[in-house]
Image (cartoon, rainbow, N blue to C red; front, side, top):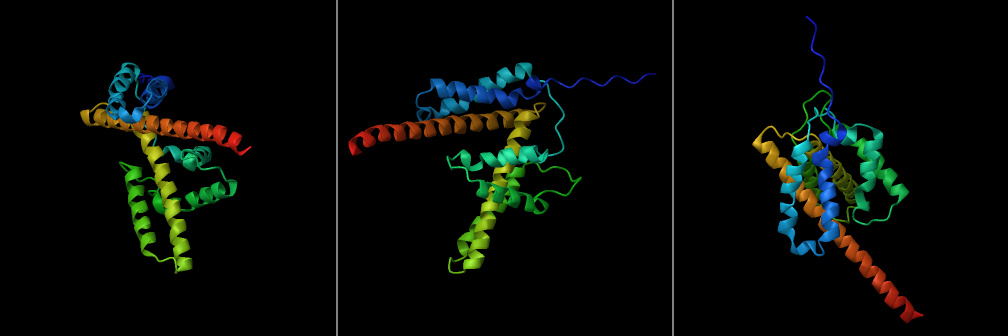
Length: 225
């Protein structure tokens, strides 16, 4: 008796619809919602129709064993590059290369052993590490120059590791959603709600800052001349 042929993998646009459809919602709300800070409930509630529409076409794929930022050096480097850029920090090549080297150097300490089952949440674990190093850094007086510098450098690494873990969790929850259970569906909606609300308010905040800076430039420069 011949074995059954393997089922074809779901197309990417259907498998990852819970991940990219919130991005479309973010773009729509950014364009048509003038003051998102006054409509936070609406931002959170927009996850419900987003999830419903995505569910109409979603076809699951088996989740990969590795984290998103561990799939390749390119994934790791690109995600780390966005750290700081999201807050408007100018890019500095030396600082970026230092962060890249440091993030690789702490992998053996922070990552699970090869072959071990994945953690339920990478971000939760990294957040605990970050909290511990931040508290320890705050307890070290600046007069202890070497210790203070080492703890500050360690704290900086932990924040970047937590950001990488946050992206990993976001991709895992929305890219490979566990929608077979009520708990899994609720988690997807909750993550989409936070993702949409934070992203729209972040975009609006930086757009307002940019417009304000341009207005001040247009007003101050003619007066100075």
